[in-house]
Image (cartoon, rainbow, N blue to C red; front, top):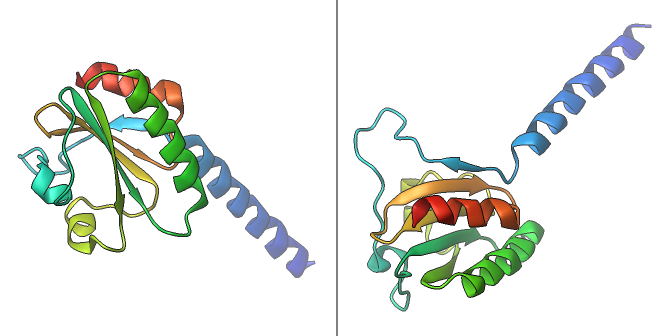
Length: 142
C-alpha cells in the first residue's frame, strides 16, 4: 500500500511540473532587471564578428547542435524576420559562446532575445515561441 501511495505522489508531482512547464514554455516575456539597475545592451561585437543588427529590431536565438525545438524556432524566426522589414535574425551556438551565455543567464535552448534598434534586450522567450508572440514582441520593440 505504501508503494502505491509513493507512486501516486510521484505521478502527481511530475504531472504538476509538466503542466507548469508547458504553460510557461515559449512565452515571450518582458525582461526584468532582477535586482540590477541597468538594462542589458548588446552590440554586433558581442554577438560575433560577421553579425549585423537589424535597423528596427534583432531576434537573437541561442541554440545547441542537438536541440530539436531549436530547428523549429529557427524556421519561425527566419520567417518573421523575412516578413518584417528592418528585422534581423541571428542564431548563436550556446556551446561556442559560453561567456555570453553566462552573462545573459541563458539556462535552456532555445532562448530567444528580442533586441530593439539600439541593441537593448526588451523581450525574452525560453522554449519555442509562437509566430504570433514573436510578431507582437517586435511590435512592442520597434
